[in-house]
Amino acid sequence: MKEHANYIAGEWIGSDFRPNINPSDISDTIGLYSRATEVEIDRAIEAASAAQPAWAALPAASRANVLDKAGSIILERSAELGELLAREEGKTRREAVGEVLRAGQTFRYYANQVMQSMGEHYPSSRPGVSIDVQRRPVGVVGVITPWNYPIAIPTWKVAPALAYGNSVVLKPADLVPGSAWELASILHNAGVPAGVFNLVIGSGRLIGARIVESSLVNAITFTGSGAVGNHIAGEAIRNGNKRFQLEMGGKNPLLVLDDADIDVAVQSALDGSFFGTGQRCTASSRLIVQSGVHDEFVEKLTAAASALVVGHALDESTNIGPVVSEDQLHQDLDYIAIGKAEGAELVAGGQTVTRRTEGFFLEPTLFIGGANDMRINREEIFGPVSCVIRVDDYEEGLALANDTEYGLSTGIITQSLARAHDFRTRAQAGIIAVNQPTAVTELHVPFGGMKSSSHGPREQGPDSRDFFTTVSTAYTVTGY
Ligand code: NAP
Ligand code: MG
Image (cartoon, rainbow, N blue to C red; front, top):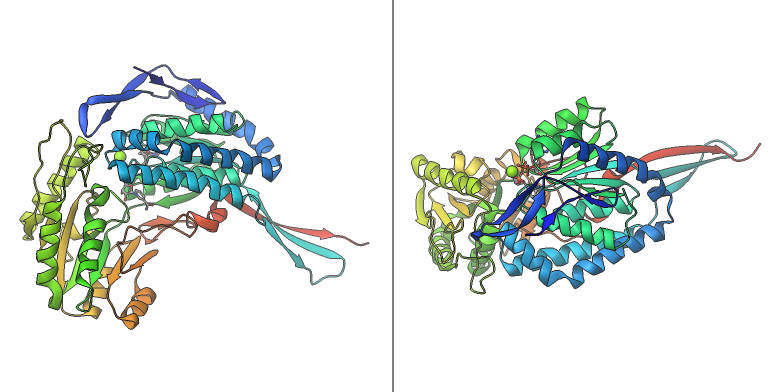
């Protein structure tokens, strides 16, 4: 079985290897992946620190070439990389290939951004002085990513980091090292100079923590759970006041009004709640439905959820792949038990299912009769579990939608332009979806949330520049 090492200073280095298991079929081992040692992590960080100044000093067009080439390789290999991603994470082949294409396009987008303005020139209030606001790289960026988007999330952090002249140490989620390893190999083939990009594989507690603590790392960009994000925030401040950016959980609502197109409402709820096995930070798990359409919505959504085919991620007929791991499956089942105990009524799913292969298969699960203060409506479950909450009117629905510690995405289904406009103004979330699923992102516009969902500048689009560059204002006396 192939051994996949860490990528450090342009070389493949590793000694201790562990299997990467397919959640659709636990007898399928995807490959052996390294566990980086402390010495290896430190080498990666030192290499990144040593290589960064020359990378930043390259003509911007040279950096753009590397990013563009990486994007092209990803796009050319999308079928194969998609299959690997589906095998290691469990999302369907269609979803996985879509994620890979997004990653390729993201590299191309930042290849272009490299050539955009990196500052502004101002006149001065004094004679003979010019003022230049310059965008400069932050330095060495530690990138720590979750398992649910094994190639898209590393890419939307790594591509802008490199574009703006930083070097990178990537620590991917331990459950999905395969896609990150391919990303390293692609960057290598695209000609990234040794040390500019480094990959260290292994546990967050060891590797992630060591990156956050290192005095040579200038910034941390993290996506994952709130608990880990908050811990990283403290450590980043304690260890040299590092810059940090955190993208964390969500408990995203979808508000369905009486005037909704009911088929759009059902399809948006189905997609938002269950596609990607519900393992999306932008998934909708609170379906807040006005009384006039409540019964019809519940009846149609229950039928649609029950008709979804759960199975092996690579089977043609599969709509919903497995849960990513046994631990996550237990978490989902615990929350289903909690929902029942809290008095919500289970109308679809709730059970694990057996398939031709042994995997972590869970039925799409729908509760009704929920109250917004139930734990299943306050805590992120991160599985194919959703709950309907009935409300009498728009104002009550909006208040409940906003009544959460999170603020990543939110949605409304309505045919009223006035309501849609009001919602866009008053909904407390970084992403607002009108007449579509809450899980919507395009790569050229800002992504991120409010409240406990995010900290720091937005990701993606041109806003990435705010995190991956630092501003210095140069005052130059030009005339004596
Ligand atoms: P997680 O457990 O917080 O892990 C995220 C990453 O942090 C992993 O690489 C993890 O390593 C690492 N880590 C763990 N402990 C660490 C420590 N002490 N120091 C440094 N790094 C550490 O999250 P997850 O379970 O992978 O992903 C699910 C979560 O991600 C959900 O809450 C979801 O909402 C969130 N998410 C948010 C967004 C967004 O953009 N807002 C997008 C996707 C996912 P290990 O792999 O070893 O655990
Ligand atoms: Mg985890």
